Amino acid sequence: VTSMEFDHADIYDSWEDYREAFRLFAASIGSGGQLVLNADDPEVKALGHWCTGTVTTYGLGEDAQIRATGIEPIDGGQRFDLMAWGEDLGRFTLSFSGRHNLLNTLAILAVSLGEGVSVDALRDGLQTFAGIKRRQEVRGEADGVIVVDDFAHHPTAVHATLQATRERWPDRRVISVFEPRSNSSRRKVFQQGYQEAFAESDALFISVPPFRHNDRISDFMDVEALVRTVDAGGVPAHLASSPEELLPKIEAHVRPGDVAVIMSNGGFGGIHDKLLAALRARDTVNQT
Image (tube, rainbow, N blue to C red; front, side, top):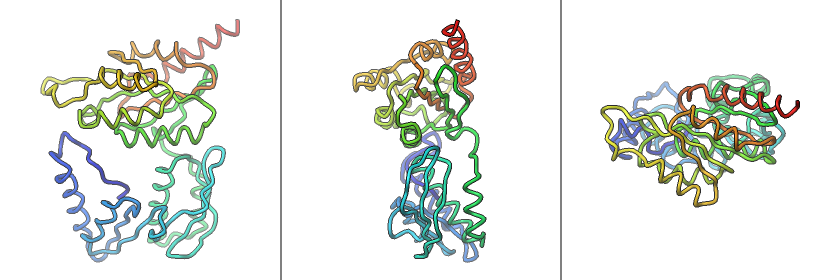
């Protein structure tokens, strides 16, 4: 379990209901099973009390059984020393930036060590792991603008993605492009969280979320108010009714040296490839 905070607001009525689902999950793991928990999250760590199987913890704190020390950001990722049950297992290289990616890596290492995978195999596997689609996936670069695709659609995930982007490309402006598409991501309960997360951006472009026949408007965030608040906080913010209307706004704003982080749990109208095509066309015109 990597983290616990209220989510899937279309399914769970409250934080208490959401937490109970995790407790039931932990209790379902019997004496022959292993539960791996993020020790840096107090709610996650507490799940160990509900489990009768083997509990293994990971994190960056000293109380974690599997932890990273000597963390060093490098070009295209980070390096760290892996400590396991007090033993130094040596230096590892991860081809991703960001604290959340490091923590997820520690979770994988904890599971793998518990299953008997060798340290050398883990080190080699991490060094050659190229990642997965839609998680800080670089879709291309055109006219000096890097276009990144990410599945982030919750305030905490948005914040972590933007933080990792700044760590990976510290000298570039970070342009956020966001589609609040899912039942949960559109909810009013997350509006303040988005406001804080997008403060990490140099600019924000957001599309109006879809509304369905059985939606209650009162349950969902006010994207116009979100844009006004983010803009008032010093981050230029722009709203459009569709990806098609958003695209020319983004193209007009981005410049060589930027990174555009496109975040959605859906296809976002193919805006990634459309933006790259528009930037290539712009670059061609600039060179003639």
